[in-house]
Image (cartoon, rainbow, N blue to C red; front, side, top):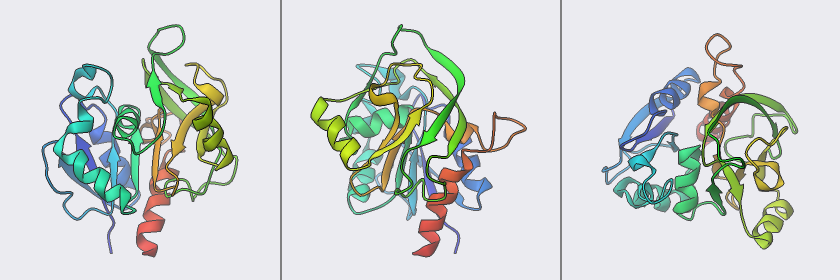
Amino acid sequence: MTARIGVITFPGTLDDVDAARAARRVGAEPVNLWHADADLKSVDAVVVPGGFSYGDYLRAGAIARFAPVMTEVVDAARRGMPVLGICNGFQVLCEAGLLPGALTRNVGLHFICRDVWLRVASTSTAWTSRFEPEADLLVPLKSGEGRYVAPTEVLEELEGEGRVVFRYHENANGSQHDIAGVSSADGRVVGLMPHPEHAIEALTGPSDDGLGLFYSVLDGVLAG
């Protein structure tokens, strides 16, 4: 069996090719999903990649959330399909109600583009099961609206339920609780601002640490 990982392309998406390449590198079959698609083509998991969907009009992810393909993604996620949102994809998943909180302008109001160290705070998700607890990852961060914020009660819930998935070693964007990524209650949906799909080989990225997310979901799919 070959796992099929869907990668969505919205108008303005930048990192779909990179996400597809990461899926292919771990032995999965990437499946292109267009924003207007009304079905998910029998994929086993979905990646909502980074970029500037619909030009970030209104606010990042606000319009993409209403794309026909996202109706299918929301339904599939609620039935247990693994979904990963990266950068703009994280913003889209928050707008769609699959993940709590919101992503706002970085502290300092500057676009940040640098390699950052993350710590894996939870290995109990579909996308992090391959990692050792507290593993350190080096991946690129590139965003202007990457500051994670949520009401106090939501932050307490995330911390209490172990749903903070990644934390920054050095918090460059002002995210509350140093949060770089969070998960849904069932651990099937994960969103993070840094870009694991740009860290899949040391020759072209800062590391190959990002492969662990794709191997993790592959393990789960193949295990049935």
